[in-house]
Image 1: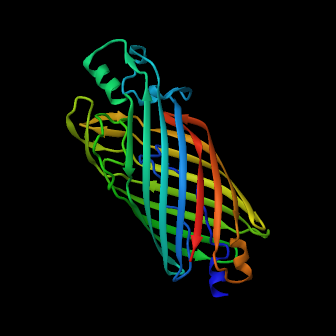
Image 2 (image 1 turned 45 degrees about the vertical axis):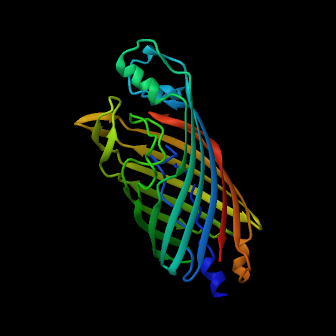
Amino acid sequence: MKHGVGLKGRIVRMVVVALAGVCWGQTAMATEDDMVPQGTWFQQLSYTQIAQTQGWGHDDKKHGLERYLLQDTNYAQFSGTVSRQISRADLTFRYGLSDAWNLSLNLPWLKLTQHSTLQALAPTPMNLAQVNSLSDQTLSGLGDMEGVSLHRLVFSDQSGLILGWGAALATAGHQNVRHGRTALRLGRPSSAPLALLHYTYYPYMTKARFDIRVHYLAPMMGKIRNLEGEEVTYFPGREASLTVGWRQEWGVFSYEVAARREVVTASRYAGKVWYQGGERQLGLLRLGLGNLSELEDGPLAFPFQLDLETSLAYAGNNQPLDKGYKLILQMFY
């Protein structure tokens, strides 16, 4: 029974991401903040498929993705479109050093495809460099690893509080990365310390929970090549998100609804603003099938949870618009 009681009410599922935002590694949300009992292994397999054909401009309106990607505000000098397909598979391991301290490691694999009909109507060297940076391309390989230490500060029948800290390590290969800030890439130019805070309230209802999650990512300065091909010191913007969600289970079935706001601050190089920052707001829905609720009655040979997740970005500024889904399989042993 100890194993079953340890898991009761502790299967906390966060929405992605990710990547969340720039899903191939620029906003990448922190590793999911589940906690498992002492001596328990947790493994998660997830697959994310995202299509990007639009984005929000500085005017808070939707435009073609190329307008978000172009580093020139004179969009009248270009014609054509740019679209991207993002496929991401994540393997996450977590181990309970104690009921109140877990270590987690996430290993992502990505395939990124870019299709472009972009042309420069005014063929200046800078415009041609932008067209070349955003032309057809496919990249695949390992993304940036992410390690997190999770600490349960509070846990009772009514509430729980988890603090996490760690880093997204710039371990992805950077070969075949073109020049420019918005060029297709498998990972960040530099590593990023991260922190998270997760509060859970358990109402007096059967198998229901209310969650608030805050994530913060602070990428360190790194080297990147601008459109002229010069290697410059790059100061990336900070990334933060706030997610508020409600989850409920009925037997083997479950659902979760959530609202999220994501913010990215301005990034700079050589004293210049390279990206003015942006934000977006999303609604999220997750439907699940699993036997985790049966742990309240005793141990199980194979505890698992299978979820299908989708999201709708309904507002934004200077950010891409993602359309897709995520399939998540969680296992405990």
